[in-house]
Structure formats: C-alpha cells, structure tokens
Image 1 (cartoon, rainbow, N blue to C red):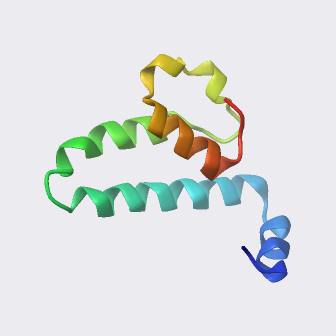
Image 2: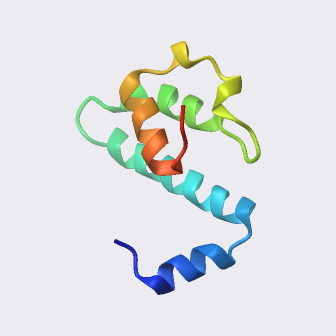
Amino acid sequence: MLACTAFNAINRCEPETLFNAIKAAWINYYRTIAKRGQNQKFLKGWLKRINLIEFGSSLYHVKKESYNESFLSSLQVFFDIEL
C-alpha cells in the first residue's frame, strides 16, 4: 500500500504529466522484459498496444478483440479502469 505522502504527491501532479510518467514506466518495463529470453519478438506488439493509449482517450474506442485478456486485465489494474 502506498504511503499518504505518495498519494499526496500523485494528487498534486497534473493528470497528463502523471499519465505520461505511467506510460513511460510501462514502455520501460516492456523493454526490460524484451531483453529476457525470446521476448524481443513481442516488443513491437507490446509497444504498439501501449501507444494506442493516449491521454484523454478511452479504451472503448479501441476494439477489445485486438487485445488478449491478460493485457486487458493488466490495463484495468494499472490504470484502475473498467473495461
């Protein structure tokens, strides 16, 4: 659980700045995973999916069929959204 100071810091952030920081963290995470084993072959698809998400947009505008269930589930948890 995040400490109150972390919540306060998040609440003071501009929404777009916070969104961009989270998105950058996801991109960095995918690049880190891609360095392991045979995962490099998946990086292009992962980055394509994360780059479909833009500040102020809704995932409802993207066909759910283009995502697998585990990716949708991770987005729900990470961005705290309902799909």
